[in-house]
Length: 191
Image (cartoon, rainbow, N blue to C red; front, side, top):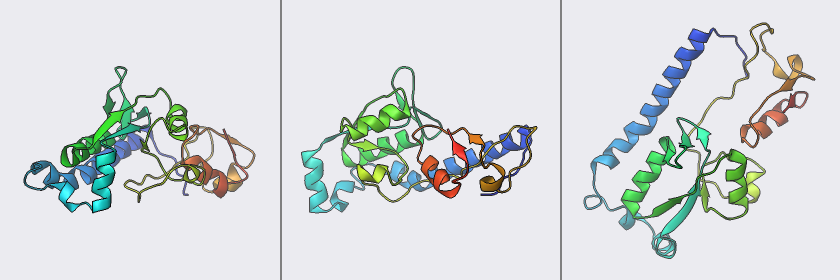
């Protein structure tokens, strides 16, 4: 993990460029599907007999996600599910007839707990060792780099395990990348 210091303008430009690239990488492959309707390309005919039987037995799937991770996904104050994953679900729903019962949550921890308690069937989440104990994962659909940001008056961080040894680094509770950081940088205190 390389650490570099960037100005606010550089970071803002990086965010805009990265978001634009991500958006295009998700939209372009889906455009041909969006241009077709169910009658011209029925997805159900492409499914195995076992998959069709599962859909018949489970016409509604309870789903939740991260309530505050835009542009990927979020819940509005009114409980509407928005973002890139929400668009994917709409396409899947229109192509398969599968209905997603979207279950809004207030926190990511609540989303994870609902999944553990089997109050929802599907969760959009990163695979990690702890989650594999109670979830089955598809192949990864998205990839994002993890970076460490430091205060302007702090030295650049080129080797986190050495330079941040004994330091406290703030992370988001329950996010999948935290366990990976803890394993990779055992001398850093992640809170």
